[in-house]
Image (cartoon, rainbow, N blue to C red; front, top):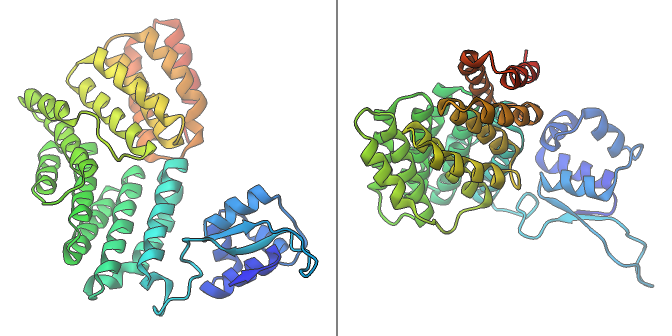
Amino acid sequence: MDADVLPEALKAIMSRHGWSQVELAAELGVSQSWVSQTSRGVKDSGIAKVQRLLDRVGWEVRITPKTENDAVKRRQFVSAVGSIAFVPSPKIAPYQDPEYVRTLAGRLAQDRYEQGGIPVASTALRHLKKVGFVISGKDRKLQSAASDLACEAARIFYDARRYEVAERAGSFAFELARRSGDFNGQAAACSALSRISIDRGQGDRGIMYARQGLALPDLSPSQRAWLKLRMARSLALVGGQERAARHRLAELGDTEGLSPYEKADMKGNVGVALAGMRAYPDAHAAIAEAVALSGQCSALLLVAYKAWQVESALAASEPQMAAEHMAALARIAPMVSSARVNAHITGILGMSARWSDVPELRQACEHLRSVQPD
């Protein structure tokens, strides 16, 4: 399936999925009026923007040369190689296609890293409801793909601080992976559930989920490393377990096979764990590295770990350092919409009260407070 001009492409996409203009606009992240005007040929957009938007639904812009025997086709919109949204499938619906579902999971992850969990939560919930039927089926590939999607939904709900929904999504992801025989999928779900428990201050539950994941066979090195990290973070929340937590952190080493997002997130998690154990110099170094890595790949991680830089400095009783990081945080915090980050910023402002006599920190607090959501 292909189209020679953008209006034809948009109409083909809506026809293929049975979407209205409003639904297509939601998938593309644009207004309904943009879809309406563009599909009627009233509005045109640059190639870069069009490629970025169409990539979200599995299409690409292809530029082809003019030939004597061919009409001029400067912009040809065709299904992307490796994309699955428009590849004929024996399945009766897109949500019954494992590759389509797995691509949706990847899209959700990218949106979370770029925007934060709040604006993506409704889309994640909609996709989750669509794949809910597969739990009773026999298609193992589909169950594994649906597990990936449910696991990413759990991470999104966690970032939006919708903890109960996040835990249900994580448990659903685990069950789907169990039924499909996907050990790494089960481990990913355990890691997500442990992460949720850590954020809620429930160290014992975090340990339980991490231990359950580590007991699984045939895990990838990166998945095992994440579970060890969750174990370390969980142990750090339990009294008397600092030595065990440090031992788990020491086991991590340089993990191979991580994406840029994962490298930044893992380094930041190590720093947060060290800060929780009052190993502040090492914590500062690890979190600073996470901030540097995040700046290259994820607005959400950049804001989150810049906030941790502030908290780590305050916890170490270094108000001048905290003021410097807080000034930077105030400039970047509006880039994302994350309930978890918002709550963290509120906590930081509370921690800062004891240094109200430090002019630089007081001014930085005022700037940070001014960008908080109403």
